[in-house]
Length: 233
Image (cartoon, one colour):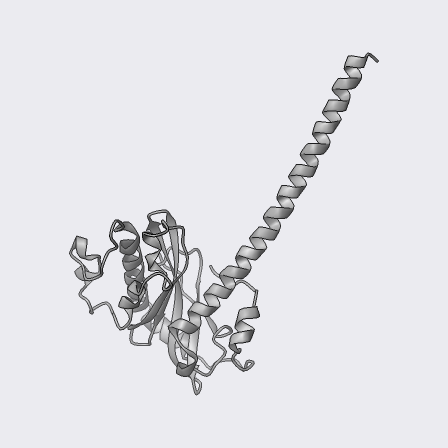
């Protein structure tokens, strides 16, 4: 075997080993990062649930109070919808429905929309997005109070045509330099309200079903340490 052939073989073996090690490192890093992202998303979602319906408004374990609702094209989520039900003394006082705004400026915007049993908004929170920092990210509560404008609203308040940003003849403020993001969120909340109205009878039947006995509601410390991602459909 010539020296050139030996050198080529050694180079090929070295490159192969390098590729294997690099590929394994990337896969390991991706796996660890994905798990960490899921844990952070689960914590953010748990915090958002208790911001929408505070502990003073319910006495059940909200994280475990999940019911399955009908699927619908009003909510661009595959399969049946998993919603959280808040109860006081065993009676339902509200529910929180996951929603999605697929038309954000930078992609999907994930939301939680809290409603009472009459279809009034108890609160809205954003749990995930990729909107532009300093512009579209004002949908977050830590960046502005904008998202609180939905509280108390319903399909008739404001009227259907007013469910838009002011630039488009609606009631809700847009952001300076950013209209697409708030408009997408407004439309997603409106679609959730339409979904609630269309499935009102089924929703009331399922949230009024006797709740299964469960553990006491978690403390804030337990919520912070809960790393299991919430189930979405």
